[in-house]
Image (cartoon, rainbow, N blue to C red; front, side, top):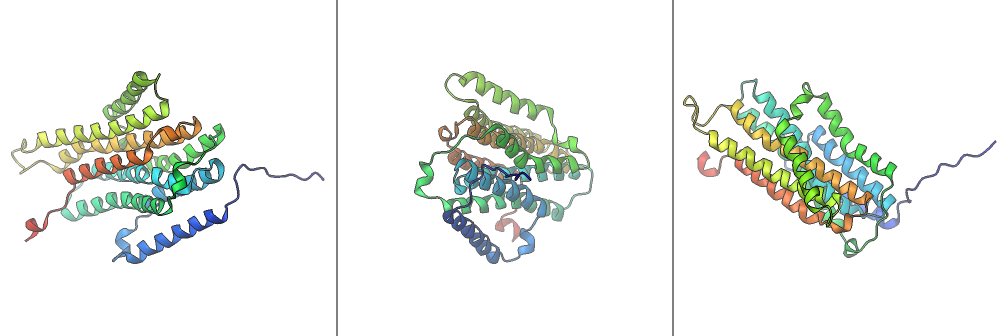
Length: 303
């Protein structure tokens, strides 16, 4: 009989890499034990969307391309959290158009949307705790075509499955935000094709998509306040309709951002793109959007 050997390009996990995984478990345990009411911080769908793709990708890239575990966590965790949050907000805002909405429903929906980004922040914090000086001077192996396609499936497969499992998957398609996303990406590429690669252009375009879509949504929202004389501000279904433009921008922009990260590893452009800095811009944009639309009443309003 002929012996069959299974070939793999994945390196074995070294002792230092095992140490990283032990630190990961330690930080998760510390944060989990620090939560005052753990039930309020658990949402299985958001947890799956953020943790599964990010951790699987981090493990594969570390063993296949020599990308440090911490670098992938720092790059992917925040945008994956924002994608999960955007999916939740689009779903909830669509539901709010057809049901009676009260404060409890809005607060519950807002906490779940924030929870997804919180999961991303946890992974990002772990990435910082594992970050070492040599993380800025490492050499990576470019992704092969099969690995690139596989990682696209890892990062977007669960997202697409959740969207398609929705009662109305078409809720996640909106023509004008899609036009903005593809139009800006194409424009960045046409303008800078000779100076920069497509991965960097797509990464920069993704930030522009998110920022512009948030501003469009907020301008439409604030310009509509007070127009309906029957309401102090506006109807809840009108609010969700206008604000959803920003949610679509978050969903499409972060998807392009993650695609650009994986593509940069395939085209060997990764070291030319400062993903760590761009992540901070993502957090700033999301925070601004939340404060302008979903901010809770202050203590002065409650007394």
